[in-house]
Image (tube, rainbow, N blue to C red; front, side, top):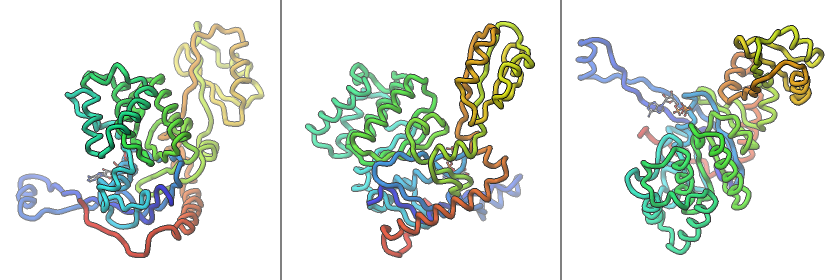
Length: 366
Ligand SMILES: Nc1ncnc2c1ncn2[C@@H]1O[C@H](COP(=O)(O)OP(=O)(O)OP(=O)(O)O)[C@@H](O)[C@H]1O
């Protein structure tokens, strides 16, 4: 059985139009006018059990709306969804036991009570037997080093501590699918790394399927073998991360901060023949741009060995938004999208055999 099976999924929102001025407001009182926004436009994708898949796209692309439909919070306008064999918005009670959800920007823990009490409440909500709960809690607390936090109220936790507690909360009932919406947003690199390692482990050891929404390409690099990219409600890419990066991101940028103002010509000479380009960022910082084919350590060695006194070196990482933006700017998105959509459609065709019968479940907006 597929973990997630989505066919022709669409979500439209009705948004009230506000007419201008007093007469407009009066007219609105008597006869409301509405605009329709289509946030998700007939998308199809399938995720097998045990996969970690990144779900990316610019702000407003429709990621959260998809996740809300997949977790049963929103009812689709049309299309089919099955998550672990359930139609999320229809079979909620049974279905929620199968999934864990973490929205980085929102908490599922109660603010004023101790963390452990929130966990106990969730145990009751999910009807987890006490012995099983204890065993799981001990394991998760040890892994995420939450021991001394358990009795503190959530409002007194740092963001990193809270996020680790949110993860435990989402996993207490041992779900087989985890939905993570920006789980590392605002965290420092140490906590981000801890969380990524933890997610890798639960995926490897327990086969947990993970759908991850993020703007942080490092999250994707650390965790995902596959990426589904959304733009304006449509899937424009579904495939491996490496292919996406080599195809769409032009390369890496390294910033060197010098003790004395650097001479770009000298730097160009040092790296001659490598195919890198140099620009001046500010008085003391020069930026080296390396296309993918260039070996990073070769280029670094040449600059470092060049004799200038370097104060700091920073590798500037591309984030997912930049890749998405580059796709549009390169102007080749449409042909690529067509090719990829063809690929997606082909996949949907095969997976379609596993999908439920032909009846179309559709519902009104919430
Ligand atoms: N409840 C709603 N009512 C009306 N429009 C909505 C609603 N929820 C989302 N939208 C609209 O649907 C579109 C997609 O929004 P969505 O939140 O799914 O994007 P997103 O990809 O998750 O963006 P972000 O990265 O900013 O979270 C946006 O144009 C948004 O304004």
